Amino acid sequence: MFATGLLARLWWEADVDTMVLLAAYVILQAKECVPYCGKWSQIVRISEGKVRFLPFGYVNELDVVFQRYMAIERVVFRYLAAPGPGSEWKDVARLIREIRRDIEKLADKLARQLPADT
Figure 1 (cartoon, rainbow, N blue to C red):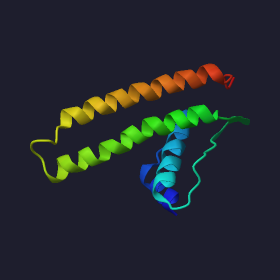
Figure 2 (spheres, helix red, strand yellow; figure 1 turned 180 degrees about the vertical axis):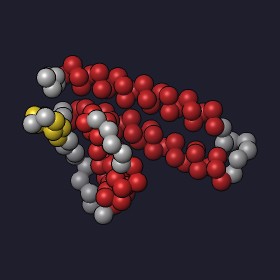
Figure 3 (cartoon, one colour; figure 1 turned 90 degrees about the vertical axis):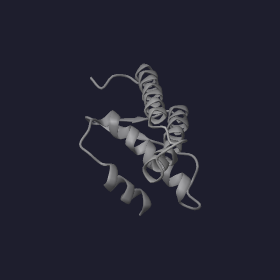
Figure 4 (cartoon, rainbow, N blue to C red; figure 1 turned 60 degrees about the vertical axis):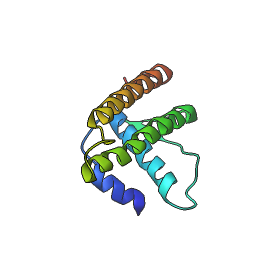
């Protein structure tokens, strides 16, 4: 139920690689918020009839990046609820750019590990 609700809020039409990121984020949220939810995750990428199991190391690295993103939520809420000293929006924008760069690096790393879809 938790993951379904989160997917309903975050879903949009996108390419398979973007959906892999969404899956990783939703799985991490479930692991963090749902009691007794398993801690090891496997993501399977299915595209054009090809099935690829993503390396555990890649999924774990995404977990680390998305945990940094989840930490920003507190800063954003603080900015919304109590703007003023200690609620710097420019810091949030900088952190988001850093996380985006890290995701791009991981995507490049995965592209080198997996064969192309063609």
